[in-house]
Amino acid sequence: MSNPTPLIQIQQLCKSYGAVEVLHGIDLDIASGEVLVVVGPSGSGKSTLIRCINLLEEYQGGQVLVDGIKVQKGPGLAQVRAEVGMVFQSFNLFPHLSALANVALGPLRVKNLGQAASDALASELLQRVGMAEHAHKYPAQLSGGQQQRVAIARALAMQPKVLLFDEPTSALDPEMVGEVLDVMQALARTGVTMVVVTHEMGFARRVADRVLFMEAGRIVEQGPPEAFFNAPQEPRTQAFLKAILQH
Image (cartoon, rainbow, N blue to C red; front, side):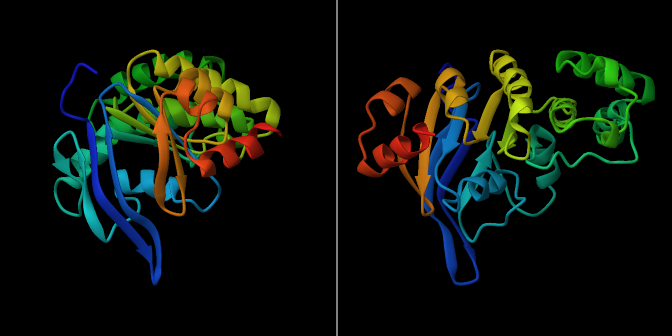
C-alpha cells in the first residue's frame, strides 16, 4: 500500500456488555484504499468491531484512530463520522423522504451544500448505484435490494474516506443479494477504503484485499483471499470454511 500510515488503527480494543467481554484486545491496521472483509460465526464480535470504528458502540479499553484522529466522545467525533460512512443491515432510510431526499439530506444538513447542489449530487449517486429511475419513490415502494442501494448512495453522499458495511445483504431475499454485491464490487474498484462484515464468501474471495476471521471476540486468522480460502492455517478457520462452503 502506498500510504505508510494506516487509515484506521485499532489498538488493544476491548468491549464488554456488562460482565460479558465481546472484544478481547483487538489489534488491527487498515490501509487507505484497502478492502477488508470480516467473516466468522454469529456472535464472534464482527459487527461490534466495525461499530466501534465510528463509536456506534462505545469501547472500554484500547483506542481507535481514523486518519490520525482518536475516536472518542467529544468535538472530534462529528469529524470522524463525517469521514466514515456506514451501511446497515436494515437500510435505516427515512420512510417519509424519497430516495433522492434520503441521499441529499447529509450534504444538505451536514456539509451545507445547498439544495440544488445536494440534489444534483444525490441524482449522480443514485445513477451510480442503478437507482436513477426510482429517485422519487419512497422506501416503502422499493424492494429490499433497491433500498440497500439507496442506503449505499446515501453513505457515499458524504464523500467518506471509509465505508463500513454491517452484513449489508443479510436482510435481503436471495435474488436481491447479487444486485447489492455488484454495487459494492464496483465501489471497491474506485479505491475507497471498505470494511465489510458479511457471510458472502464469494464476494470475499473476489473483492477483498484481505479476509479476516474472528471468533469469540478475537482475530483468529487473516490474509489475502487466495491464501485464506485455499490454505487456511488455523484449525478453527479450516472448520469454519468447511462448514460454510458446503452450503
